[in-house]
Image 1 (tube, each protein chain N blue to C red):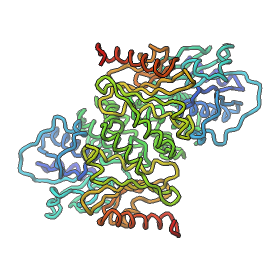
Image 2 (image 1 turned 90 degrees about the horizontal axis):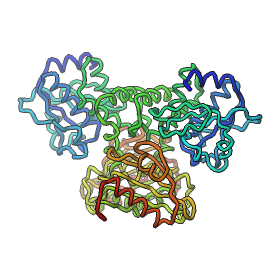
Image 3 (image 1 turned 135 degrees about the vertical axis):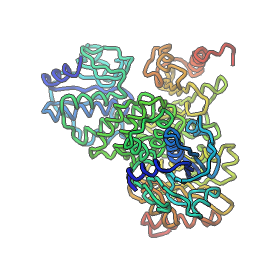
Image 4 (image 1 turned 90 degrees about the vertical axis):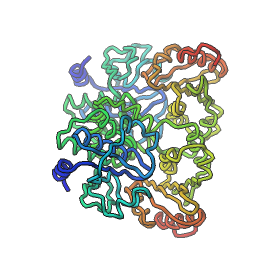
Length: 320
Length: 320
């Protein structure tokens, strides 16, 4: 669907459920609460759903938000490339084929919804929403502007990564004109760490292992290690960038334990390697420099599988 | 002077020496080599000077640069608020009153040059140059665009800090249209760390001390500690932001040993505290959220002095 079709759809429906993805980040929550803010401003009813509860570190995105009572008529997924990302509590929406609209910027989007607006070139789903709001002439509230800025900023690593576009900068230039305290948002999102988080990072760096002439760095975060730090699971999110931060590393992998024998991989790469293609080897996906997947097995098995694929991707023939 | 006067000045002079500040950062080097690139494109002769040699981590800013032979006629200082920042090898220019033009964005600029273009609201000296180049209609080379982007990006913490303006975003939106590989620049400037640096950071976090109910965090970097990490001094630059990264900290201070009894303070603050005013207590200066100064004495003396002032600034009356 195009913006005109999306506009028409939103005008002719009501009572929206907005789905955000599990392990929610700034873009899915920014898009969720941003869209919800618009719909409510337009006199509609809308709620934002997540499989888990909304993390406290994003509290500023849902301040003033309250759950409305209504009989749902329309379901919209934001920033969700694949129904697997709905999480256990929202999975039923996919199983029943009940997702009416998907708004997303992942090139790997599976087109599971009845109608989709997918722009794989957009830096963030929040940037798509920003452009849509411009298109329909919606005058944003400060709260909605704050949601959109946060999604664009967090998904681009604060305008740092390759997925940053001139459009992302132009949107930021306008959005920071609202009363959003963008520097305070960025500080919360990128700089502020709990003491536990600092300790966790320190530990992670300590335990980082290098492979293949230091071209690959891997950090393993076991449940035990994470629990011992006394930190919310959500705090471990930004860690994915650490392994790639060492000079010379081309592929950085964070292996996070989800359950006893289930590990989640976050893969970050430099120009040489396609992270999305790498994760596809394990039925995952994402962006070209940042992607993810889940692998089952013991930690030893998972590491062996991963190193095997890394060896191939780096073109190392021998046991090195 | 205004842009018209600066334009006239540059048109009617030749054989430029461009001075950059000691412990050079992305903005002073970006402005230096950016201005030099423009002057050479305009058929003039120009060299960029620094008290020390140019750090290797900024090599991409001076690739293709070579020293020209000429009899100097004009001296221009870029991004230098105070002649103290010239460094020992360039100090003579100030002593002889030989600095003709200063282009700077520090509100604390001392107006030591014969003519100054100072815009305290500009995010970076490179942003001033960008606007000047637009004003005179100069069509930048990719290399000059790379220099300007780098200065704007590094001085705003990649568009993260309060000093980021809509103008900074608009400039970035245009500059990234040149062949500058902005993501690779940002990766080099913000993400890539040598193994030694990672070890140094780990150590710094380990040794971080908290004071006044965790409202103040201090990291001390002694020459001994820095040497033991096997890392270039320039690598310790970005560390100033670490102490402020702990939740609840309002003033973060990095104390770096310069000589046996000389310590350099880098001060970072949240909304509550004026870092520039704090550093003025020690005859330093800078920006409202990021400032610096030098203090003489043993480490113990320096720490005692600093904590005394912090106590006052935080309004703590007792020994707490």
